[in-house]
Length: 245
Length: 298
Image 1: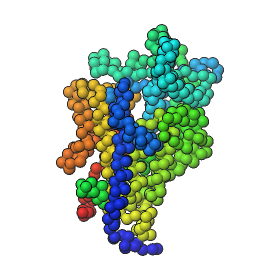
Image 2: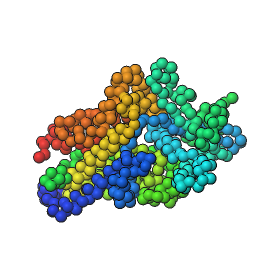
Image 3: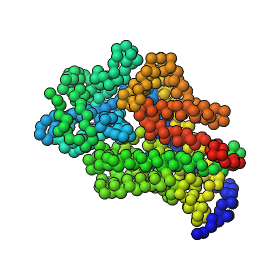
Image 4: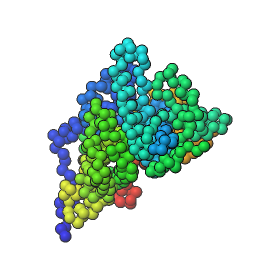
């Protein structure tokens, strides 16, 4: 067995040459700029766009920032802790019956990290949501229209991907997805009105189209997926979870 | 310039980074195991976000993953096996020079594939993995250290002497963490709830996050508002409070409480834990040595 080299064990690291220190300093500065670039740009985002002070560095470093997965705003529970967003899925099974699922479901997705992955999928689907462009916008050929349509197409593509997954996963004929918002109750509602955190009244099925076109739909709650959602553990058949009479 | 030199180029012991390596490797392995438990659902041909969709989501940016081009169960299985093995090797410090790079790369590939299913945990795991690549975190409390004692030191099996690379990695983790908290705090200032004192209430009554019922806290609006204010002030000023030796215990103590609360109360044990691991970068190696009863290294 070879003995450890005493030189390697005892010789202290050689001091770095000045040129190496300069190179390392430049690299360190670039790294720090890359770390700050995205949260700074994200922080300056407003209805008027982003700050001209934030854009140049972010654009120059975009290849590195985006590939190295440094493009985060770090807006944890900010600017406000908001409601959760879930999805209710209404399946038509192979034999023509209807079954329901809600995602995420902490009883069905375990361990907790797996539940959280599903939660992020439904939350991000909501974050991508933008309603279809108004008829007036299309008629007037508004300059905002292409960007609006592009964002809508992005949402629809993600929703369609989720629907394909659900149809395949649960061997269904079709599936419809409703976005559901779980409103956060105030302290008065909890302590005075005794509303439980998972009270049905706190869940609202969100319309997909502009509100003016969907008032009738939001009021037809007895048949909405939100009120009939049934949990199905991953892997379990929809056949076991058809709505009970 | 002397201050810059001292800050970046003072050699540092690897012991704190070794602790971070062990925790980060374990967390990375756990994350990959969870992905693998439903591999078909997340990366297969009928995944929640399928390949065409994830490529469309990244059409305008520089993200890239080779997982955008395969949904073969065999290849995905091999990929995840390599990712888990590399993460475990990082954890135990086996071939750390290589395993740290492989673990980072595989995690990065998965992150770019799993767009929309990610959260803060993934950001911190990638961040720590990236900085662990450039230091000698495997030179102590590792299989590499055991091999180094038997076979002798080399670039692959470095000694646990103080080194500049350890210091640069530590400084980058520390500064990155300061940026995270600073913008986490500043972003809260764009809302009202963090200032009217109600934000913590609306965090603990979020049923989808809740893992421990802390609703009883809401019976005291003063307590809720005080904890809300403490959180936002701590987060914003962490980048200043964590450097002086006098206030560092306060900043780190608050980190333990906040992230412990997130872990236990909001069901994000993984995220809370990895944030505490990142905070560990502010522990001086000499403190560890003192704690272990070893003479201090000057």
